[in-house]
Image 1 (tube, rainbow, N blue to C red):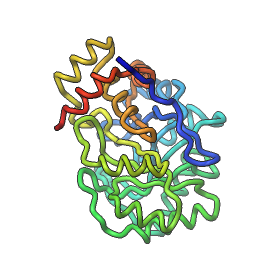
Image 2: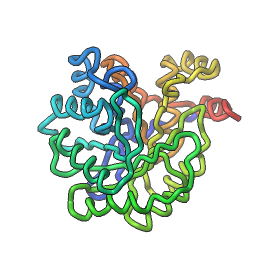
Image 3: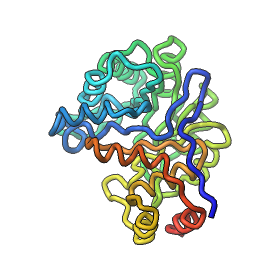
Image 4: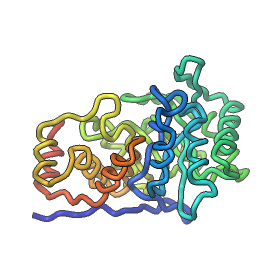
Length: 284
């Protein structure tokens, strides 16, 4: 049976080619993405493992994760691209607080620049905080504020996170969008139409929680296919995402170097056609 290996990179703009297998840095912070990591040395080693597409945000920690990335990799090697997010802050107990005021958004961009040790951010995603069912509220004001910083050279490219199809259209009328980051994985496929739209328009679609997040993916079919292919269920789930769309990127997170290497290996896992069909049918 035919099998294909996913392409390793995707070019989204003249100056932006990223690896489709990225690294979600969220878990480099302490419990509940708050405070210092339990094992700082291991966290730094995970960042140094070779991924050239890192997803982060200054509200991870807060600031802890970006400072770890800077400690591990600065001065940054050529070809490394850091994608960050703004649109939220943390309270004293670690709670997540939406923050979309234009003045605050601009302050968040500057904080990301400072903690990462950069003069320009490769990609900044506007985070709306919608998860399963993004609404269609206008994002014109906050997105326009970020576009002002793009025009001033503090940001190269803009993206969106937790958005609907209508919000993507609204944002594109203001500035080009190079990435959409929404909830999508083997078990959560409500965004199928947006995944296909992003492919048609050469927009990277980054499914967050690609392995289920706080509720890890569990499926006997997934386990059986993994056993047959000599892989882990997590590797098969990531490989399925990469074959789902030519502009799909994945950003699994871990603070374990071993798990990180397993994730990276999924980029070379070729799924036979019958395995893809079986995985496609899981949620139908």
